Amino acid sequence: MSRKGNYWGNAIADNFSKTLNTEMVKHAVFISIQQAKTALFDFIEI
View (cartoon, rainbow, N blue to C red):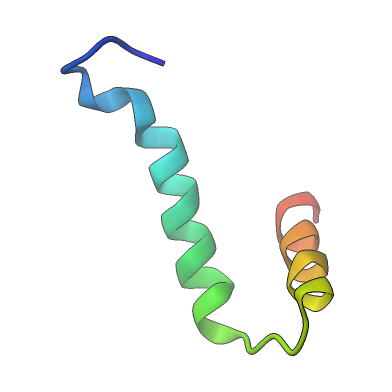
């Protein structure tokens, strides 16, 4: 990571979180934790 005051250090993680939230989480209803884990794995790997 970067030093204090450098706000660009976490930009990649923030961008990934935003993409994950808008493309997968908001459009899905998960019945179980295992279903959510599988969907997350598929989203990242495929």
